[in-house]
Image (cartoon, rainbow, N blue to C red):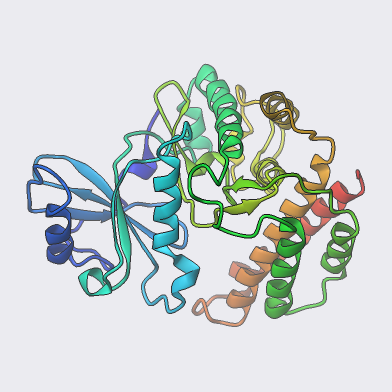
Length: 353
């Protein structure tokens, strides 16, 4: 398998967002046998937080995570919180990158950051990446993805010091309120279907069992795979909270394409080729691994589609309003169309309840 997202997007001694000398001094105090000078390169495919590969002259590598440039709401990209979660999970059987340390002193690098050990593996983001895998590797990736999700949900938050990470009750209710507020604040047009789906979801919320750790964005391309296809590390914990574990499974199914689908509604269309399990097989494996009742999974799939539609409507409104630069109508109209498609998929899922 190839490893596109372990290859720096570009290489430079000091990319925007990194004070090379200050970070070198900070890391020297925490890493044995550091061999400067260090080089820093942004890793492609990141999300809102910035991620850099850090390499020393001897070829040793680490990963640095920091908030976006110009971020003014520190709580939206809380490095301390993300560092805390990964550090807590290090003592469990959930695969995460080992943490080197957290720097909360903004004078060092302009914003808080933390550094992890480099995990040498593969991130599968598209069909090209998936095609480079064997059928057996794809099958192993799908099975490992569910097995690791089951391990995440089996961790007792109290046992690892995360019991106070968030409220334990009413997760779906709070999520519906939060994302509906965001949707209403960003909408630029009438979308009755979004309002109807929101109402249907509010009227059909399943009873939540004991709260578990919820990753919040669990999908294939947020995991690092080993040579056999199994997961070496789960990445991007910035949305992690406590709540209903089935929300993770529902969102994973939203991201999951099956053979014959074009992947237009899936964030990870790579899974639509031979070897990857079907959605039904993922659900069956999760139920067997956890003992949880998955009969209401269509609710969580509907919620996942609706939540993603809320997020993309925000992107669409920013493009349409010109805040993303000089774009013509064709460049941003696709986002608006996707919101409607996602809402329709959400309604189809609620109709199965």
